[in-house]
Length: 253
Length: 91
Image (cartoon, rainbow over all chains, first blue to last red; front, side, top):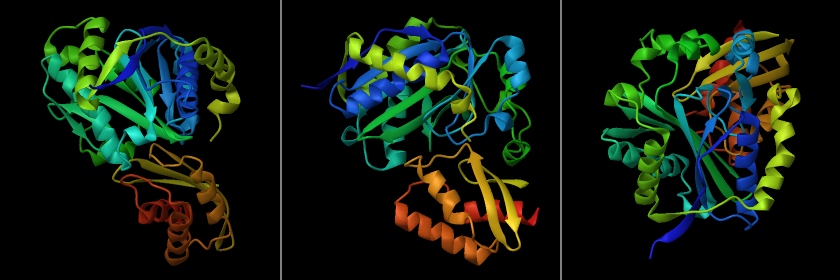
């Protein structure tokens, strides 16, 4: 019999709540109080998240963010800045014991991103894992993930790009000239793709979620069973939320 | 403070530093790399303070940081931090 992990309901929250929920799940999983869990969620309002080592002024045009009412938040995970479009992205989080994934970091990304690869296959797309932390379709990034390991447990969260506003993304993010020139391609349109673009139609968030649930079940070899947040998880998330909303946290580096 | 960046195979390393004579007196490293555990970045910065900004000294400091903390940085190697720092120092 496959192990059973919990699948939480699709939620739509502001960035600070979502980041706080992820940390609460990670901490409580490490304390043995939360089961291994997968969840899918959306960002409202749309948000730019930055990696835990990034400096916000270098990565995000805060004037533009203010103009469009886009939130900006620092993650507890490394990696780069991401524009999370309310209408165009489904986000996932997986929390489990560190012993439930390979020790090797790239191998553990491969396992969890493997769930996305299988999920894209459910949608009719041939995707592949691109180390360290990306999933590509037709050589273009369609999903990016970031992982942290703390207190004996692991959190990996990441994006499924369904139909983000790429023009707004470009306006919000300060892209390093060196990064662009290195790829010999000046346009993000040639490096990033979306489910809508690849399929020629926009599936519903629920359809994408169902596909990814099946994908994770296959890749992780577990059964994902619908469950609910515990009161303890929501209470701890409420406790963490002010940190993520604070200017101190945003400007930590 | 002087500033430079360097693109490692995974991630752009951004370095802001101040030199007093030949030695690093202030340094701040940021970027879109991964480091496990994340808190190790503070130790790296601390270890670099007081280090002479030449390739050999920097390499010795960064290598000993890796050895003493068991830190993992997928697709970023000691020489990539050193290169980023040298670029900033050479400004």
